[in-house]
Image (cartoon, rainbow, N blue to C red; front, side, top):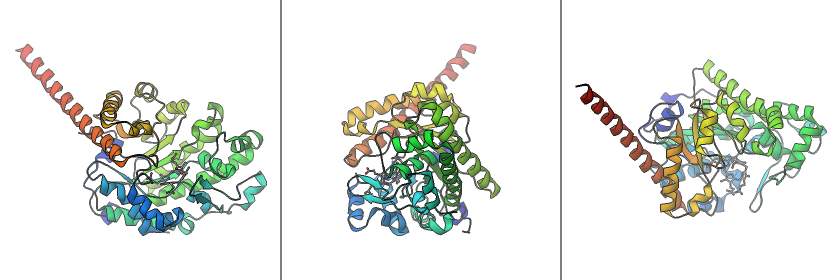
Amino acid sequence: MNKILRDSDFPPLKNDLILRAARGETVEKTPVWIMRQAGRYLPEFREARKKNAFFTVCRTPELACEVTLQPIDRYAGLLDASIIFSDILVLPQAMGLEVKMLEVGGPHFPDPLKTPADLDRLAKSVDVHESLQYVFDAITLTRTKLDGRVPLFGFTGAPWTLMGYMVEGGGSKTYSKSKAWLFRHPEASHLLLRKITDICVDYLVAQVKAGAQLVQVFDSNAGELAPAEFEEFALPYLLEIATRVKKELKAIDLDVPMVVFARNAHYALESLATSDYDVIQVDFTLSPSFVKSKIAGRKVIQGNADPSLLYANPEKIRDTVEKMLEGFGTSSGYIGNLGHGMYPDHDPEHLKAYLQAIKDCSIERNSKTASNKRKAKNDGASSKR
Ligand SMILES: Cc1c2[nH]c(c1CCC(=O)O)Cc1[nH]c(c(CCC(=O)O)c1C)Cc1[nH]c(c(CCC(=O)O)c1C)Cc1[nH]c(c(C)c1CCC(=O)O)C2
């Protein structure tokens, strides 16, 4: 068991904007961070990766810390959170499956789960402190090295998304192998999803004990499911993770905002709005008005421009940001991000334009609203005279 680390064990936080926004408080400007903000679009990341294999970076706390800090150094003052460098696929590794990261083609499981009998190949029980200690060490080191500049996110993949990778053996166009499990082997599917859920809970709680200040659950493949299968095989586990993590943290007097990303599952928004998550990350297919109609002020929203916007020129980026902020609002209930992660061929300068636009437009909007309010108050007072 690891020691529980608390705020007093780390340098004082100098920028708590995202924590205040995640709690639904009024903010002076919109906090922003970006999924995959550490990655191949950054030359300094490609340099670090030349010398080290992908999972070596994940497993070496000094290297994971170094690449986590790269975007924070480069975009100093423009990013309001960091996210620990790791991958959702370290969890299937901890369960006993081999995962390689191919230079071309991404994740690859040489021996994926083919039939329910293969569940016997998985570790009988997983002690996250034994198999994933390197993640907790990376978190503790990174929060220390951040020196309070911004808060640090931990994360996990969601059960359905992880099951997808474990059965498909990698990414897939149709997810037909893993979806065949849901229709042919529903009991074995639930067994596997239950197993992953229990590990996700331990894993997130341990990340917070190691210093993570927010956590995000990535259900990147949620939208591959029809609503009925989502409701049966994905949603209950997503809901359970938030409820159990919050409860276990409360028992040791810890409390962090939890973010959920059920990508492309527009039908999930209403259920997630009544969950124990604090923040809902939305993908770029959803308009602010649609999202707001489903969530109706019950949760903080995070997102959601199309990452391809970053191929546009800075004027177009700023115009789109203005509309996005108009739609989501800037005084409370909103955290800026993209609707999915960065792409390797993005220009780092265009990400800078996006971050700067979110800061500038939100400050402008909030000061306009404040001066309009002051004006309305003065007008009201003078008409009474
Ligand atoms: C589905 C998924 C994975 N990993 C992740 C998800 C969920 C988010 C999403 O939907 O994108 C999550 C993830 N992966 C990575 C992070 C690090 C933190 C960050 O966001 O900066 C996070 C949060 C690093 C990474 N994970 C990966 C990279 C690129 C590989 C490299 O450095 O060689 C990075 C920076 C590899 C990875 N890992 C995964 C894939 C499909 C790939 C290949 C992607 C590609 O080739 O573009 C699985």
